Length: 337
Image (cartoon, rainbow, N blue to C red; front, side, top):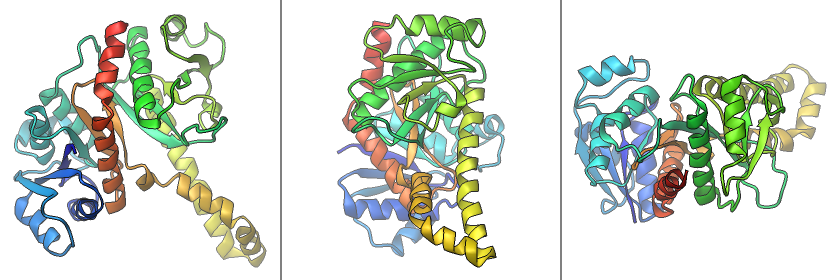
């Protein structure tokens, strides 16, 4: 079983929820977990939990980087921060992958500092998974969107590499033999969106073995048209946050309406199954986290508000990615390009 390093101090509810999640995981799987952070604090939380000590080890790190801290300044000032120490343990082979719910910028800088870029990769991509409709049998209920923040703008070559990395991840994790790959754009025409996107479109059509279906627009994101959607980081980040915000809005409006008037409450009861399904679909705790792709080592980033359940599932995703050889699949794809 792989060993997963966990940034115990990262996240809005760290270290309590992080440690509780790992304690639960130790009773359910054979995954070896390395908790990195304030050792005495971690041990106090474990003492109040039921867990398997054979599955959990602790590595002390005296500092932590907060969610609101400037990533560059914090990484420079806190050399013994838990995310940096955890990344170093992965880089030296003491663990096979890293999971954090902490400061994403700091996590990306920790990877850049300690991990090795896959040969040929121009820039790493921060991916995210989100729920959507499905259109064909056995299609994964989660789509993969990248980049969502590691870049601001990028060129056509980087977009093509994002497509190959996302395709490899979906093949291994979602078990889709030929994922549908699309380019997020402002129209479906091949020449739409400026020279960079038009150039990327032309190149994506020629990549052997890539099931490129063309451009999709923002209103297609919630549909099952594509399994992997690629874009620049600025656009991806905005799209992802809008999807999250709309989902939360719908659920909140439904609950508010049910409390304000008996007719609305009756209607809510009639739609309770559908609203409950929407709530389940938008529950990030169910899928745990998403990868940073482009390094020989793997980082899974979990939502900042991750609960114990979310952390547990993020570690499961990391272990699955290690077992299924995701980084090797990406390296092979980039090498062929």
